[in-house]
Image (cartoon, helix red, strand yellow):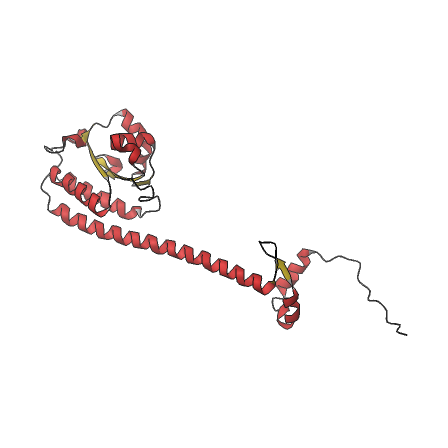
Length: 233
């Protein structure tokens, strides 16, 4: 008759933290214990138990998908920036051929509608600059207290504004078309918009967004501002 004694266990309890610390200190623990690894089960999100290896494989697949999505976002931003760079080049060449304020405004309307597929383009030049124009008198406006208040942060920031603008801003910029504008770009002309501003609107709410390459848009605003300065009194 066997007289084998039952194994005696120590009185202290091993906590989850102890297990985690041990495994972290011994990362090759399961390399010599493959059978044990295969027996382990982890609850899946759908409630079913899966092996540790299967769980790790699924986690790696999820991480890979997330990294791929982030990479595609970066690629899309880079492509958009490349397109903006090409548009700046074409705009610069077109502005070289202008002879007055009216020519510049015509170029801006044509290129922004063509290159940015914008439904609405509004050029506003502030009257205190003594703008000399015959064809586009409606583009000359006063920079009054109301306008300054609604665009105070824009003028202070001195950089392009992209995305969805406030209702009051849209009404000032696009008038009767304000409710149709889903997204917009607002460019300051001159330092802190001293010369004026250009509003580009689209009925697509995702056409212009805050992650657009504002560096290129700022360069575009500077080029236009320089062209305008040559014709201001």
